[in-house]
Image 1 (cartoon, rainbow, N blue to C red):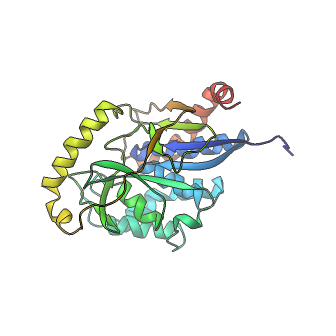
Image 2: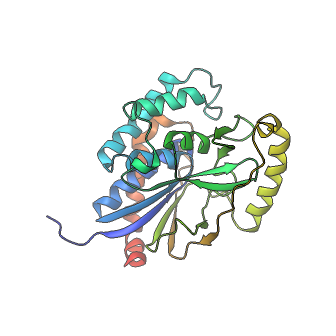
Image 3: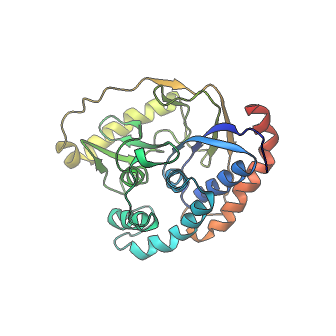
Length: 274
């Protein structure tokens, strides 16, 4: 029996389509190495994997759910022309089936989860952590201009990775004192000034392309959250160019790659978190 005190960490799981299965192996290996996951920030597929672990707190269940995701999604999907154009109804039914028919609320999760989305009215990212987890995941998974935005309360949202695939700042209200480990899959995403420019340009593009949706909502009066840079964070880059983002049948390869990735970087992680 291992009586060694667990090392608390927070995870940031980036987007990447099928490559996001890497996150399952990452979580499994970190738990094996006696780390305690205090919270998870997830974008797109990172949010799916984060949800699979957060509602169960059991990596075996998470691995099983992730393994079945591709089969279940194909079972429910009916109206998609590609993996980029999502069948929202089918995706929701798929996720509901995987969670045994339960639409988990964020407050019911065993591990705090924050799903990153892009608000089309402001062109800025938000960290959803209230209400339906599945609705937040759907919003975080919708590519812009290929899909219509998803409505949650009085706002419309799209993929959280289109502005900042690499999270640098998070709301002050959710920031934790323990270290963060970020698993970055796409190196093309930017932050800082580039993200600000993208935010402005996308906001104007959204106003034109999604006029219908924006007319349906009241003027956005949400108070902008105070964002702070994450002081203690280590980034681990994922290079999986041989696996395409739509190849969900290659889940096990990604699981193994995730475990290998943590093993190869364990000396850095332990040094950083000690």
